[in-house]
Length: 402
Ligand SMILES: Cc1ncc(COP(=O)(O)O)c(C=O)c1O
Image 1: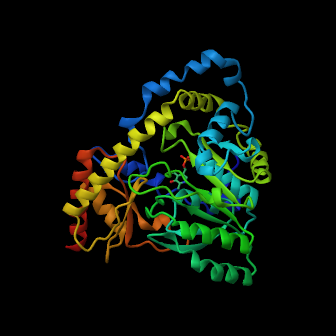
Image 2: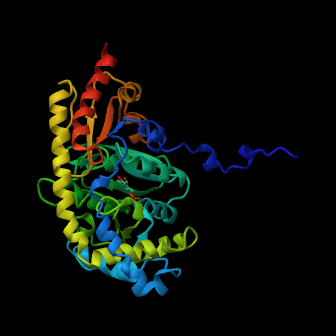
Image 3: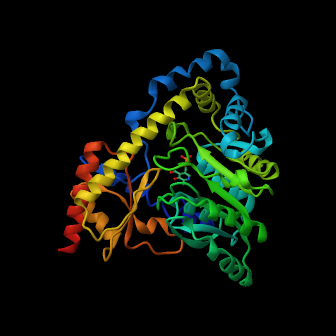
């Protein structure tokens, strides 16, 4: 028998890959009695199971199409629904050629990178940002220019200097990645003034903007801010949204809207990846939406999650030491905590011993940092667990300070 040397056979990308920091937490989260504030999971108690099951009627009605291979750009009735439903946010009804259904927004991100990124190209991201984005972008060979956030989102005034200095060192900057509403993890929302400024800067330096918006429909206070897509006159904004947080992540159905030439390239990449997103999943989602359930469900989840957001805010105010700072988010799934003087990766170990899990800060920093910050998700835990988990988190912080 000859010896297999896989290390020598792996690609450079595979060799340098690191596992997803959040997926690595799963064994801890699954421990009996663990309260999880870690993954960004919707509340399973509120999944619209009966309504979604009712959508299976489409199999009887249209099974010959639904069980067949589908068009790579997506199942036509779903595309039609999305372009109509999203028109108020997009500023117009988008053309079919501008819309691609993806297997989760995660895939949209990957296809966009495949279409735009050569190894060594730079992507501008918020700091902190979504670890799944860092992972995908890194897999495609991108480097990161990271821009800090404040309460109004990415500090866009810093962009020109950062772009110019990257260019001066011979780097190509391709796109700006922004999670515009209730950012994952920081909870902030990009202000209208900064959206306009980002568009201006993208035009000045001829960049694409990737406007990632999985949480935009989950606003608990305040009013919506226009999307950059709706304000863009050049076709330089690619806007992604997903059914994961507003219906069910298990469906793995999302979409990306952008310039038809860019979408066409992403379609070609997708042809070589999965040919099409599961037509069965798309058809079930389409039927559910066309039956009016999405519009019926949204106000319910908004009010359900608002209560949970308030529950975590009250529990944190009651239990957490006063030097721990955070803002109550206006929407989305997350609180972002600064814990002065404590390494949150170490705190994580104490916390899981106490029976509560969160995601430590380093996971959200593409270029290093995040030692004293952590993310908690308020949607998944039960209301009682929001209180008990906060008490356990306080105990873990006290353990660290003893
Ligand atoms: C900011 C952001 N973008 C994209 C995704 C991926 O979502 P999907 O389930 O649609 O792949 C997530 C998931 O948590 C996210 O938080």
